[in-house]
Length: 457
Image 1: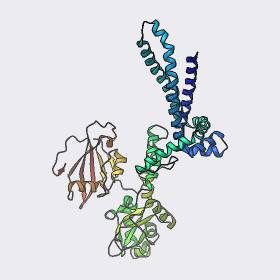
Image 2 (image 1 turned 120 degrees about the vertical axis):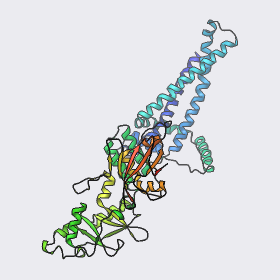
Image 3 (image 1 turned 180 degrees about the vertical axis):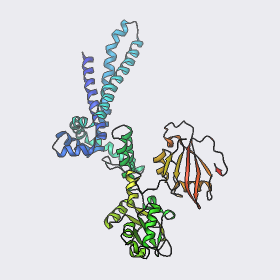
Image 4 (image 1 turned 90 degrees about the vertical axis):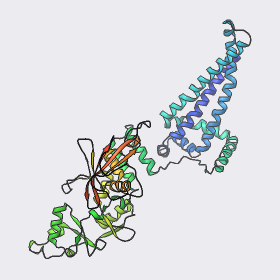
């Protein structure tokens, strides 16, 4: 009779252990914002959960103390009870003397451990992970009562643990940090897309929006060598001709050098000039003041500058005051939604996937843009901004047409998560030069051999 009473007590202790385990896991996985909203709406369970979350470290210490106490008590009560109940059956089975006691207590240890793990640990843990908010609401009251009742030993143990942390140079926290960094948010969004919680297009838009604030004008500007400048002595007819040749509608107007920007002219101002006067009206009569921004300005404030001044284009200057390039409102929008192609865009795409599996890329693409287009994560460095800069950095000289740079990348960088796989071999071939600037680059993935003059390993 005593043994059965001990077993019943042990079962109750297992259930109590399950409450502590469920409280511990639900408190650390529940969505804080949802709890705060429900608590404000008058939900009693959410209000109690919110109280517990405000002293999370103490509550978790209480749960761990409760788990430890109940497990010790279960071992103290259940194992002898089960062992005593098994003695007679084992003796009847032919075991004698000390063997009966050893086998009985061995079986008792296994049985009590398995049942405790199932009832007191695994089932409550999985329940809490599956339904954290509901579990937290159910367990918060007994958890808070126990923590208050055991306040003194919990405070003592928590204080000792915090002292050890401070000795290690870590400042203890009472609550979980609810804020997330941009990198963590982006990772969360991309994982949600992989798991199917949100569609890929939405995830891509959100991830781009998060990354938007980390970029600067230098990351998105059209470099100086690619900008079509008009000189101050140009005419309205020259503006119209430049628009016809380039497909652009706005042009920076300069004095003697590109560093001397007089303003920006829009083709509509030139079209508004009577036909018989277009050869005589100087572009300086049609320009608007140019908005100038440093190349270090982040995109968020840059967007505000363009919006507040009603401008579509800004001149980007470097730290020495020289013209570094131009940035347009379309450049900023494309950082969020991706490339926008319209009837005015040039036919030569920034990236094009050929039938043979290779990629034709603009030399002005950044490594992160190449990864976005091709799935290949090229190395990034402070020494260059574009893949043209990467090629020059690897070659150690000015490139010539036909130069090949071969890179060995982690297989995961190309989209394979198998760490044991062979390195991903990528070849970058210089297809076209414009003066000393690399204009087009071919990217070949899993290039087994790269043969040719000017190759670089």
